[in-house]
Image 1 (tube, rainbow, N blue to C red):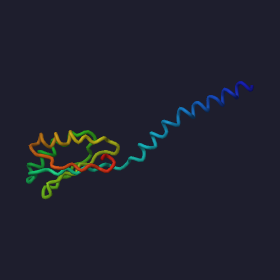
Image 2: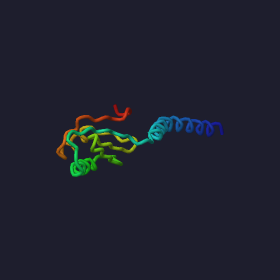
Image 3: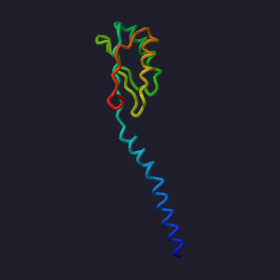
Image 4: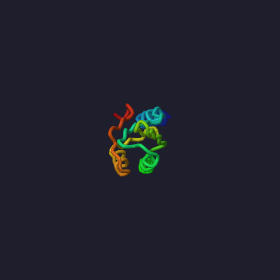
Length: 112
């Protein structure tokens, strides 16, 4: 009887050690629930046709949820899903593929 209860307690202890590290990771990811916004300042963005070309190239970015183009300011606001790693080089490449230059890319504080 003593052997059975010792084995049960030992097993419970070992399982609690195994579960502890994983539960911390799940908690961390659960707190990252807000979408991430990136601001891209683009030179020469002045007409709806230009905006369409940029939007078409940016739509392929991984984890992208929304694109808002502000032609008057020469800005594109990209909204990414929470927890996605933002690839600055992919953003630059997409803008260049559309025929424009990304002058500045402003990342959310968690990505800087």
